[in-house]
Length: 306
Image (tube, rainbow, N blue to C red):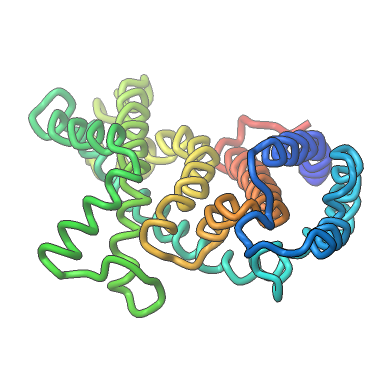
């Protein structure tokens, strides 16, 4: 197992290198620069600023400087937040983004798994059709549409919940968590339904029913563990979707997480801040996929790691 984990970590280095290279050159090709929004400064000061951040060097040289700093664990200073380094901004925002993402994932599992089980146990009956219709609705409506709708209905019209902010009580968390979790609730429900139907039709489950075992016993001892395997594989892409989706949710609800820093950094052409967030998210997604692979082996003993 340790050898497998080390081999996967070693294999992640080229992936991270590709992410860094693509992100670095794409953001540098975007029009504008990090000091364009500042008030006009004399040419000598502008030249000094560019020299301080190596922006007067050719792009390959800037890329080399950036790679060298990343290898030393330094994402550099932020161009916009001059009193903070990128590492400090990520350290401030990550706990908020992590809390938002974990609550959304927990809600997705708590609602999606029972909904999928209920739909499978009532296959082709009205409850199945209703649950799958709701799931399809959740999948087709994106976060950036659902979030303003929730804020408008529950925050502005009904005034039950705050429309923005974070950390001022559980009420401020409800709308962002629901908006981020809803698409994943739908995916989890559909996946669980399909997996349950496949497991329920397997010979050993039919044998258990033929023996007259109680439904609850069959579900908990024989069906649930096998039906959860596809859901475990889904956790990696779902985590990536929640992490990237939180960028939009944090901006809409004014949440001080990494996603909000990323959006503000992109608007301000804060090269180092955008690069730092991209590299951090890339590493996080790779780590989550590795964790899911390890969990999959724990749930399914047939999986062997070479």
